[in-house]
Every structure is written in structure tokens, then in C-alpha cells.
Image (cartoon, rainbow, N blue to C red):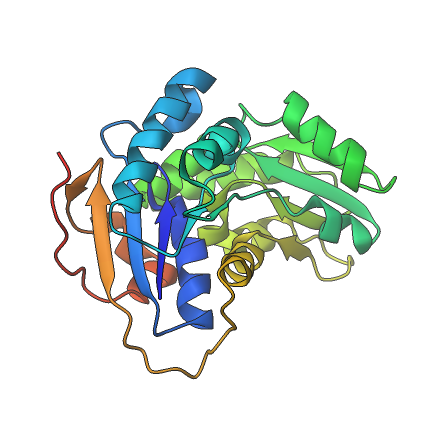
Length: 264
């Protein structure tokens, strides 16, 4: 079994680690786009073009499923990716976990990139899935970029700034960018208020990993031998994980990359 994941950068590590935990025996293909990142600053059409390049590079490795490990790419490019690759290759997108967050009741904050915050897409998800609970959208200026570079000081600054915009009565935070899941505990520590119940965080990685297995008819097997290989593609070329990936536990879970064919 082979699972591919794609993103412009290391935001896909959270979903990659979730797949690795569910199926240690799965071969993994990580298709990144360092030549085109960051995707969030591109127009929807331009982003879709870059996403297609990265997706087709992954598809050439003949995976059983492809996870789009990026909220922004899922918003803008998922229909195009599915039209190009399905039904031969199941494509699983990443959507902010608003529904399960709202199910817990209480005030919900959605931490997302400035481009996503206030967008028609996110407002639609809130309208359709928040079930009437109060929701505050929090723009996280520079946080994804800081996580991508593993810049500790910049992460602290960005997290503190977003926490200052988060109402004191928030009980649940939706991590609306896959990069944020790599620093989830730092977010928890910054937002948790004295006297409030323990803060609940909702990411998408576990649900996306489980959905990918369902799409290909495979069951979780967390006790399987850790025999899965890792292939890394950088804008279509054979490569290695960016050094910043090893700053995070999710990156350190992965094996050394195995050779892949250069696709250009």
C-alpha cells in the first residue's frame, strides 16, 4: 500500500504522521513545491496550476490514494485535482474541523491564514456546520511561514499575536491550517485561560488519514511492522525532507527517503 501527500511545504507532516501511526507499513510519497511556495499568496488559478504539478508528480509514483495536506489547496484546487486524477486515484482534501468543534458547544475560534479568514469558503463552512455556536475567526499573521522555517522566535510572536485576538471565553480552537498542527501544544498554552476548562484543539490530520484508508478499502493496523518507505519529491524532482521538518516530532517519525525517479 502506498499513500501520497502533497502541499507546498511541511504542513503535510501532520497528516503524514497520522498515516504513519495508522499504518506503519504504508509506503509514503511526499510531494512538496519549494519552487512555488507559498501557495497562499498566489491567485486561485496560479495555485491550482502549481497544485496540479505537485499532484501529477505524486501520481507518477503510483500511489493508492493522494491526500491534499493543505487547506488552501483544498479550497481552490480540489475539484480540478479530482477531475484530473479520479477515479483512478482517490483524492482526499483537508477541511477545517468545524463540525466536530461545534458539537462540543461553547465558543469556538478558528485560527487560519489571513487569506482564509473571512473568506467566502470559511464563512460557508461556519454557516453550514457551526450549528449556532458562537465562532470567532482569528487571522494568524506569519504563523504558517514561521512554522515552515522552524523559526522559534517568529512562531512565539505569531502565536502570541493570534492568542491576543482570541476571546477569553473560547473553549475550542479549530486549527484551520495544517502547519498549525505542528505547534498545537504551543497554541494550547498561549490560549488557555486561568479558570477556564481545558482548551480543546481540533485539527484535520487524523480524520484525513482515516478517510484516505477508507477510500482504498484498508483498515488501520497500528501494530503492523514499521516497514513503510519514504519518497520525497521537491517540485517534481527527487529530494529530501527540508531540514526544518526535523524540528518537529512529526518529521522525526519518518524514515530516511528512498530514491525516486526525477520527473522533469
